[in-house]
Image 1 (cartoon, helix red, strand yellow):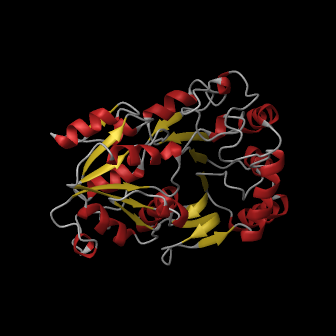
Image 2 (tube, helix red, strand yellow):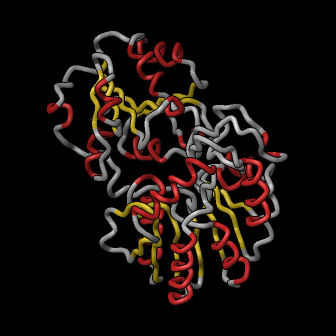
Amino acid sequence: MKYLFINSLAGTGSTGRIVADKCRELMAQGHECLIAYGREEKNCQDIPTMRIGSVWDVRAHALTSRILDTSGFGSRAVTRRLLGRIREYDPDVIWMHNIHGYYLHVGLLFDYLRTCGKPIYWTLHDCWSFTGHCAYFDYAGCDRWKTGCHHCPEKKVYPASILLDGSRRNYTRKKALFSGVPNLTLITPSQWLADLVKESYLREYPVQVVHNTINTEVFRPTAGDFREKWELDGKIMLLGVASVWDGRKGLPDYIALSKMLDDRFRFVLVGLKPEQAAELPEGFIAIPRTNSPKELAEIYSAADYFLNLTYEDNYPTVNLEAAACGTTIISYDTGGSRETLGEGDILVSKGDLDAVAAFLNK
């Protein structure tokens, strides 16, 4: 069979690696796969890929969204070209993942999907599919998505709008587009997200909970010189990994926690921007974002504990990667995080740094 995957990333980032690994699995079974991606591709030399548009298309879409709050409704010409390529490729199965990210016009895409007659899977990695704006609403404590979005408290958060609030319009438009599509099955990586879907306007569709997996041939205990390089011998290494670090990912909490621990501990944060790294207090080591899974596996393996202090997440792949490398996880009880933990891992309430510090200081 021929599979077409659509995602913002290919082979990089958590969703990009998930898509690439699924392609490799299907290709090993004799199927044909193609990844259509919108933003970035890495480590996909063995997988056919096709870029949707260009970096300038993404920037134009993002700029318009910043002003008009129209994320998902730009990139018209790019999407028309994509649909032409899809018809030419003629897949047996269409499998969508993240369709937000400033690279697709979801209206044109779903007009095609509604009439294509093909089996369609849609793996949801966040809540964007059933809100009028945001990808997550936990941090804001908002439940307007259940009845109809308006006056969005997350307007300035990805996909950020600095001017208009289009949440009411977007909610109505997305509800109409995403409803009533034949042969569509939703997949969620966590039971937590599946339960939310059942409260949303997507409740008409069958939902399968399929936990994300990772490539354990890459993510496994991996020897390296990371501790020696950063003079961590004799120290307790606390690791955090994120593609974007902000308050929602708990960056202030890592800093606050460091003040509750003594000099035995060192924090290593992967994925920080240079300006963020410059503001870290003593006792922190900042590592730029890496697209090398092997390098990341070495860092996970070097850590004594993996800290996931995020306030919003679905089914965090970083927890899976850390566990596969043999590292104990300490995680906030966020989204589907508890579903990723194993025996010996520690789950604490969001924001409960006293519990984290008490465990580490015992």
